[in-house]
Amino acid sequence: MTDTPNYARYPSLVDRTVFITGGADGIGAAMVEQFCRQGSKVAFADINQDRAEETLARCAELEPRHQPWFHHVDLVDIKALRMAVADTIEAFDGITVLVNNAASDDRHTWSEMTPEYWNDRLNTNLRHYFFAIQAVAPQMLEAGNGSIINIGSSSYMMQEDFFPGYAIAKSGVEGITRTMARTFGPHNVRVNTVLPGWVATERQLEKWWSPEGEAGTMQDQALKRRIYPAEFAQMVLFLAADDGAACTAQQFLVDGGRR
Image (tube, rainbow, N blue to C red; front, top):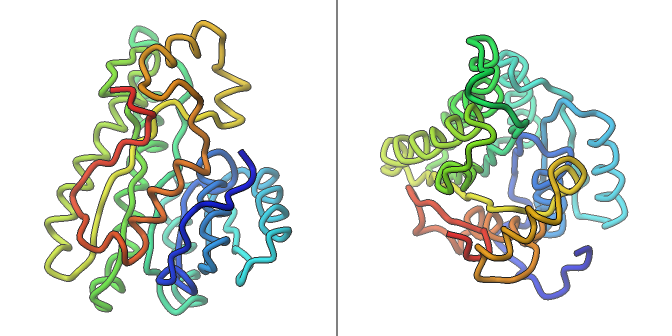
């Protein structure tokens, strides 16, 4: 799915500043591209420089109002994450939208889990969400406006058992969302979670796809087709725009009706 002629245009997203973690490929890259289509000012952070360059090249072909800004950051390094956020705030005169997206769903079993890998899974899939919020929120609170969108996963709801460290970390995303939504609500800063089901990213198709797995997904889903990254991004755009101004502390599933 490469063309998006029928998707909504949000006037409030024009020139709005957006910071996305994990924007080099997959769902993250789709969000970078879709925000660029809206005319937003986009910065994204990722460890994968090669894929980030590909995303930047695609965005350049869109001839967006603003070219996105890439920060080469390992998000496990909280100091580096804080520096990327601070540089973006200075360059863009603030960040209005934070999308916490970066994650890794590498397969593993409970029996092979070590304390070191446990820490790695939480650091990779959960910890940086909180510290990105901590870095971005003060200027949102001062401005009295902001939208924080945490990308979760339906995997823990589905009781999928082939990546327990990932699923457990992703279940914690909802705790961050609901806690911070209550904390920031009086200042008109909203916090929501958007959960993908099985989204047909290049990574998923290359590493995890099988005919049997897709058949099982189609059996579970109400919609009998693949869900694509650009489709998933539309819910994020809505929550980032003024159209989603009454939504906070909520979970939004984009999974084709799988649950």
